[in-house]
Image (cartoon, rainbow, N blue to C red; front, side, top):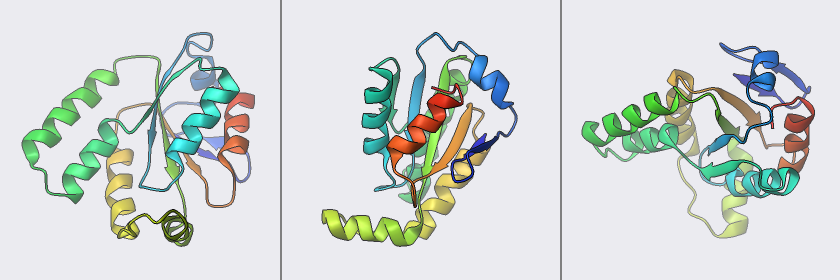
Length: 163
């Protein structure tokens, strides 16, 4: 599933917006924020918590990210498989939503410099991460923080009935 937050139009892969928006709307969701370092996961978590008054369980990284980092850092198939099994179990739950936070490499590098964080090979990390994201059976959307602040994106997700 992908939400194009630049145009505020939604186009989801495999699950229509109306179904996502109406699936257990009144129930809290388990929201997993995925994305490379400095993409905006912590800021997104703060924005979701603030805007929804801590309605949802929001976590920084889940099986998708852990599988990606198994590949990136050669952690071995056994660990990758364990995360894959967790992901499959989570896919059976109706209230799990993954939000993949994308951002341009240039902005990621700038954020690293401003926060004194190690500058990573973001093109490689993003390629591996997106491969794991695309293959995931979890309900998921993709947002971009390159030119939009997370608070704007969260407001759009609320207006669309996703949060």
